[in-house]
Amino acid sequence: MPIAIVVHGGAGSIPDERAAVAQAGCREAAELGWRILEQGGSALDAVEAAVRALEDNPVYNAGTGATLTQDGRIELDAGIMEGRTLQVGAVAAVEGVKNPITLARRVLESPHVLLVGHGAQQFALEQGMPLCRTEDLLTDYQYRRWREERRKAVSQADEDDEEEPPFYRLEVATTMFASDEEEPPYYRLQVGATSIHLEEERHGTVGAVALDESGLLAAATSTGGIFQKYPGRVGDTPLVGCGFYADEHAAVSCTGQGEDFVRLLLARRAADFVALGASAGVAAQAAISVLSAKASGKGGLIIVDAAGQVGLAHNSPQMAYAYRSSGMDQPVCGV
Image 1 (cartoon, helix red, strand yellow):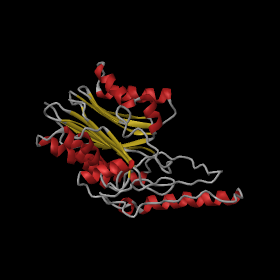
Image 2 (spheres, helix red, strand yellow; image 1 turned 45 degrees about the horizontal axis):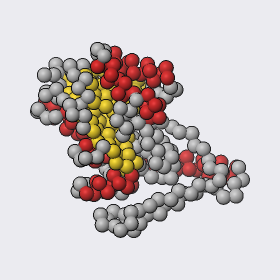
Image 3 (cartoon, helix red, strand yellow; image 1 turned 180 degrees about the vertical axis):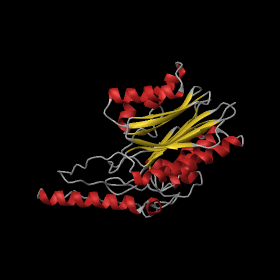
Image 4 (cartoon, one colour; image 1 turned 120 degrees about the vertical axis):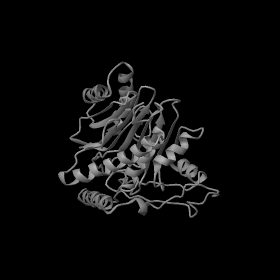
């Protein structure tokens, strides 16, 4: 039985000076997942390990290095699925979790499918997963971007002569990380009557798909979301069939402007193309053609089918990726 793995580091505009490091991270993640498959490990373990590696790499917008919300927080989304029994687990808008893909894996192994916000955080504690501080995930690059946007927002507010500019207040219970707290922490967002609109800047997700020697297909996706996203905003990443999907025919992971991927159920759509007889490569191109025809959003996806064929496509300027399958001596990488 062939084995294969494909990973991506997000779709968008990748500057020339970041192309090499983006490819290198994808290559490392693909090699990590490949070693698991080569040793007889499961596709589920391989995609989780690959995505964890990408989450730990500050180059990408997932886990460490994730973008900030408008009010300066890091809210993470992730989803993972295996195609034999259709077990799936996902988390959304979760804070204080270093590797949300591993938390999603724990959800997959539970009676739940999707946990969000404080509930996902509480579940992490119940599973013995330590919580981290926002500072542990925050990079200087993301902080400087957020500060610059806040500076622009304040300047615009001054120009508009607002009596009181929009402001945000965060209230957190002092026992935020205690497992026996009587009252969960709560958050309050206060915005002035004429809030400033900040143009959304899309940034990619990370993901992996794999086929193991038993024929199991699996997919995993993780993201910090779009830059300056509205607090609580959730895109396609943790939504099964939208940002990720796996069944007996194919495993798919998507990246791009999540709202359009949600509207089109793009991951499931790509898997259905394979079920109808298309190769992985043709299915990937067909799904992205639907995205281009039906929506204005940009993005891409990766796919592996039950025969070990891999495919990838994007309508964005670039998409960082790496893949390896049976018969290959080393991964193929690109942007």
